[in-house]
Picture 1 (spheres, rainbow, N blue to C red):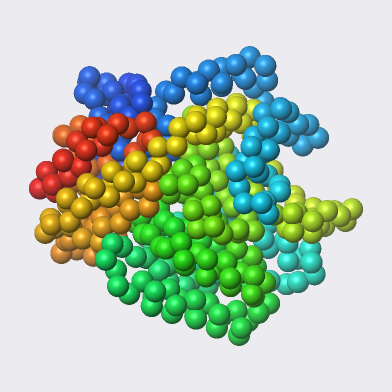
Picture 2 (picture 1 turned 90 degrees about the vertical axis):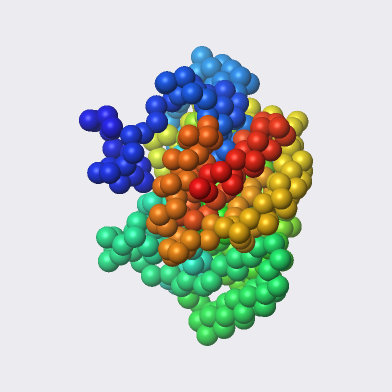
Length: 422
Ligand SMILES: *Cc1c(COP(=O)(O)O)cnc(C)c1O
């Protein structure tokens, strides 16, 4: 390990030596020692179009020759305006305003502040949020407060604010209790909102797939039921689509797949095709209007030095251009289905699930389910020996390939899965 580096999410004391990467092209990473590895997790879920995409690289280069950055308070520029228009056209019709920041955690932080202040600006005092067990929304304090309390946040627990956690109706192929689980959660939610109607600013959810929590998937129907709650009980609905955005669930956004119109949506990860750190929090006109006032107290006092960075915006526009021409989502989902069927007989695997370009399954072990399950370390090592980059979340194994993967390449990875378990 380099004497000056501190890696994220890494037990520095006993971590295996990090793998040095020399270059990346498409789905392939080339390591310093010459080995080639196929990136089946899109490098922490960001490289939706693979590595070193030429069109995105060109767009960033061209923008850098014109304007690399400018203060975004009191100034504006074409890349930000064009990107905002493009996003609004792709999102459900209630969305109107795009607020820029530069990573997923901050996009969630902004959404939580916006929702809170929306009620304050309306003269209502709503002090809490409804969040889901198993959630991951990022590593800043607000995002940590909204996420599952676990070993990662434990040392900070006295500093986190309280939210109400309800179960996530995770489901899988052949799950016969899905509707019942969903109804129980919806009943519970209705109880919370009936008992305490003025307490919750918003419901925050990772729609269709909880990412870091273990690729736990829920149904489109559940999101529709949530949407009904959202309108019936006048509480804001916030979708954290930091991971599910930009095609991951088989449609451009999970809210489109579920045909639901949330009030606020958070996007990052795939937004620049993995080239630049950028995120947006997009809200409806209804929310924005409560901030439109000459009273400075009602202003959204939030911003970052790199807000609306033109290079990030240029990368995002190039990404949208490519995504509008190539929508590989359907064939990827079909291929996942075909290959998962073949794995279903495997005695060590269960809870198979697929949503769009993501497939996941749990490995049966003697240990507890979850991120710290020791099977993860073994599989990570086996993967590299087989030339595959996979990074199990505890005992959950998942595939989230860049969309440029070919049919043969993906089938080959599936063929290796039984070998990785040994
Ligand atoms: C990754 C992730 C985040 C945090 O994004 P960062 O860019 O890592 O800060 C938030 N929400 C979800 C659903 C994520 O997957």
